[in-house]
Amino acid sequence: MNNNKGINNRKHTLLMKNDTLKGQYRINEQIRAKEVRVVGDDAQSKVYPISQALKMAEEKEMDLVEISPNAQPPVCRIIDYSKFLYQLKKRQKEQKAKQVKVNVKEIRFGPQTDDHDYNFKLKHAKGFLEDGDKVKAYVFFKGRSILFKEQGEVLLLRFANDLEEYAKVDQMPVLEGKRMTIQLSPKRKDAPKKPAMPKPATEGKKPEGDKVAENAGNSKTE
Image (cartoon, rainbow, N blue to C red; front, side, top):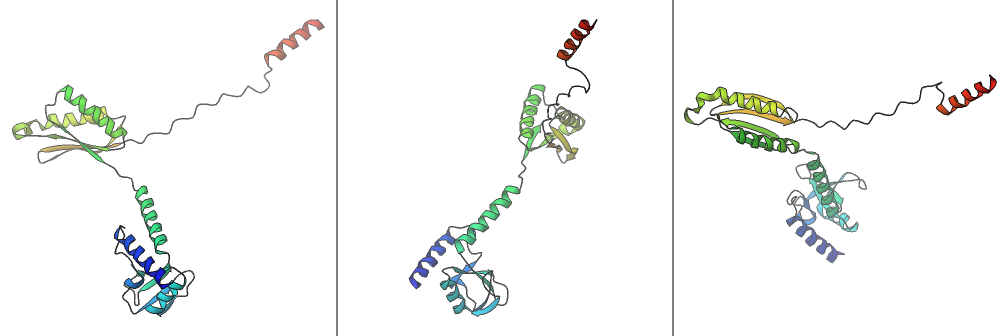
C-alpha cells in the first residue's frame, strides 16, 4: 500500500509541475501543519494529527488536499486529487467561455483623406463590425493640419453615418491631443422574422365544388 502511495505522490507531483494550478494546493506529505481539520461529505469535521489524516486518506486510496491553508488549523479534504484538478480546470474553462472577448479595431484617417482611401477603410470597418468587433476611428492631425480639425470631425461623422446599418455610436468625435476619435459598436443582429402563416378559409364560405353542385340542383328543380 505504501509503495502504491509513493507512486501516486510522484504522479501527482509530476501532474502539478505540468499544471497551471501548480502551487495552489498542497497535498499529502507537502502539507506542513502538525494537525489539520478534515472536512468532506464522508468525513466528520474534526481536527486530526497530520499523520492520522494522511493514514485516513491512504486507507481510502485518495489524497489529503489542503484547501484552506490560512485557517487555524488548516482545512483539508480527502479526495481524488486528479479528479479535483480536472473539475477545477473544467470550471475555469466554462467561466472563460462565458466571458465575451470584444476586440477594438483602430482605423486611421488623415484630415484630407481622399474618397478611394476612405471607401477602402469603410469596407474594412464593415467587416470588423460584422465579426462583432468594435471600431475606433480617428483622424490624426500632424503639424499645422490641426487647423483642419473641423474637416476631421465632418469626416468622422460621415463615417458613422455610412456605417449606420452596422454600428451604433458609443462616443461622438472628441479631440484628444492630435487625435480626433469616434468609437462604434456593432449592432445586434435581429432574429429572422418567421414567414406569415396563410390565413384560414373564411367560415361559412362554401368550396367551389359545393357551389357547382348546388347550382346544378337548383337548375333541376326549376
